[in-house]
Length: 210
Image (cartoon, rainbow, N blue to C red; front, side):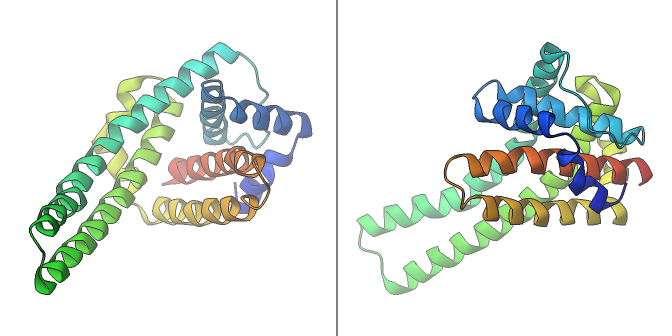
């Protein structure tokens, strides 16, 4: 499935699109939407280009909940790096300010803060790449442990084809969110569903052929 086909997929059925947008609006219920994204990935892995229907809502909710847990676990390294770099710099800077920070010390703190942000962003990007493959793996196998089979995930995530798909998906997601953010309240939520279907579809295709 090409990227163009993936972009078109959320708009194949207007009824499903509206249901998806409504689901994403409601807190907790939006886990059903995440489960639906996984279903989009699963069907894409099977070369099924048709937009899935919303059915077996409880199953979608459970899958969405498991996916959320997987995402939280993968976010832990990023949070640790953030605390060790940016957090430490902020605390050090705050303590120095209370004792009268000199210009050189201020510049050093700002430099440390900047380096911390860069390190955090690099780690976050790597984690995002691996965790996206983990989500596809979970959609494929259907069990929690499969999302942490790092030997398999590394082989998939660090291929040129999958990395390109991930990078394109990130740019597409950012562009859609920025554009739709101009629509008050619901714009971002509309974008969340459209982006979710598109990216999970496209990444699953890249995962399958990587």
